[in-house]
Image (cartoon, rainbow, N blue to C red):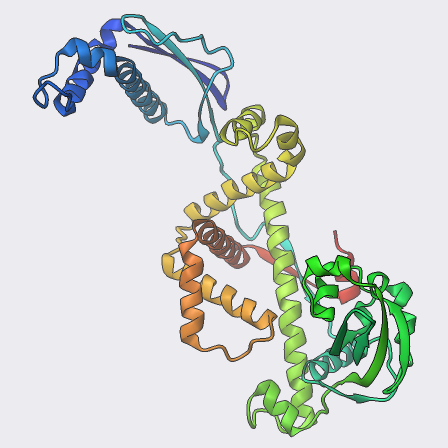
Length: 438
């Protein structure tokens, strides 16, 4: 067997593997004997079938397996001996000769292999990165206060329906009726919304429900029928308003504070104001940290100045996603892919440089935080720990989710270390200006 290489540049190899018939003769013989030992053919004792019969039945498969094992071993040895920092995986060259796969013939295989560049840069106090300290304004505190009280609010009886209110109505025509239907006026098609504005209990009006509620799923739920039954209904209905519901924010009192923060945790307006400030600061800090992480990525990707085998990567992405992505699709998405890939390399270098590790416990804690956040997004506070733990374990069973969380932990570890090592240039900024940053 002969292995040769050509290297057009520092990041790309073409490896040629020539396998003569004599090279695979012995491995092929052993493979056929293995098939013979396992063969259970009618008329012959197990393992005693004639070799000629075994060759006719399994010869092509045995040849393919024997040669491919040799090719795989040759590639592995080449990568180890050359210390290739492999990216992707070896890929058949575009000038790969056609193979006939006949025993006794010689074979030539050509592979393209690419590697990542060597990475070497410092992370120290000479690196200056801005960290934004976002100001808290009185207007922002008022908005947050209103939102917090609104979240604890409730539907109450109203007099006349406004744009953000609800009506409860009985609706009917000669073919169908539905009672006690809740209608959120803000969800009605804009051109039909006027039919509801200003209505009060006892008012009646005609309405084309197809025009007012274009979403078939919502319309079927309102009329209490299936989507399939909609086509058979006359869309003109009479609405009789039963009552009007308006959403009223909670008052800032002890009952509301206990619901928000736990019994007795907040007892005065001053303490409530402190909690509002804490919430805004936490949100600002989260926004500032996210921006800092993005700036760290940009700074060190630029500092590393990585040159990558982009032509190889484009071909490889099409090759490994055969049938899923065309070359045009890969070309379109490649800029975002290559930026993410560069950061993965830089992040890996930073973690190796400082001996950072991400454990399964780190990933589990990230899963717990993720699950708790999801519950909070749906307004589910105070979810029992055992339910959060169980949901987190389910998340970890999904390999894609596990890898996503693992990468998130790696990001956090690398960025936290950078923050310790570099010079932070703290800059005060308003939220308006912060949102304008590019």
